[in-house]
Length: 387
Ligand SMILES: *Cc1c(COP(=O)(O)O)cnc(C)c1O
Picture 1: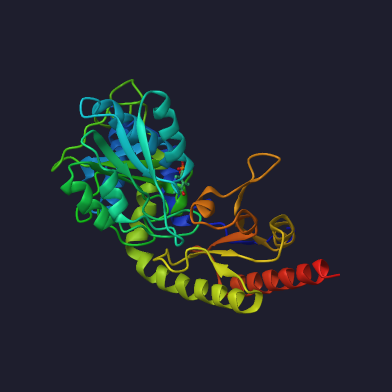
Picture 2 (picture 1 turned 60 degrees about the horizontal axis):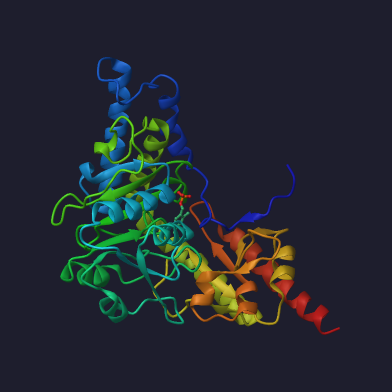
């Protein structure tokens, strides 16, 4: 096989854990039934696999199994949550609150709702990427339906104070929706204790398959109402019609069960490796940690490298390590990351930022290779620029 770089882009997607693949396989072949077929053994076996997954997903986040709605991923879950609540709570109002550093799945959905008449407040963040809970309180109006605040940021790993935000939401009688796609299975969280009304997650960010995810929808105190965005056979208690993706759902369930057992130990191991990477690069290249002063996910670091051109840095390091940069390369002219800009990082430094996402299969020698590669690249670029 050709020389492969080290994979340090686990925030973009994770590999499937082989134990997850094993749990999925029977659902393609022997247990291929439609979970909605009530009259024969194939249907019952599929329904049983879905039911087990529902309990595993619910168990990981402190929910009841009846509160889990399976979707195709976090993007769909967030669309259902935002559009579904906007329709269902129209009598209360048209005002939503979110944050400038949210994922595009939230921001673009909000932009869509604005075209339909929604009023949206986009809360700023401080230099560390955190919102100020007082800003949230001040933004709440009598016609506010919900606040959408992500649990942990996909670019920086910065963790918002969700329990505090949940208390504010409850006091003011608005719903809290959290995009927990990067947090679920990585750090402990509990929807009941943290005042979360809805939570979005995705299997492929926690060692499960792509194309499977879930929305947690609270059933009591308060019961969250949603208008379905997909009409059809009334699956998922009417909230998301469509034949269930049984293999994907079984994979999501297994991924959650593994995370419940292993995430505490995994977080400790990855924090050691992340800290080693971060400390070495800060000391040897003068890099600065984006969001370094905030609580962060244990396996993520986002570093800005002063005095190097982002495009040069990424081109050279990509031969040895797979990472993401602080540029959204959706066009010929890359845009600087909206997350880093909202944190006050200057455009040039956003471009010269790199995101390292460690994962379950990252080893210490991977980290040593990453340190060596980035140090060498930054030093060579400095030498070239000074010629
Ligand atoms: C990956 C990601 C999403 C989108 O999830 P999909 O399942 O790929 O649609 C949404 N929010 C965050 C924070 C993510 O990291």
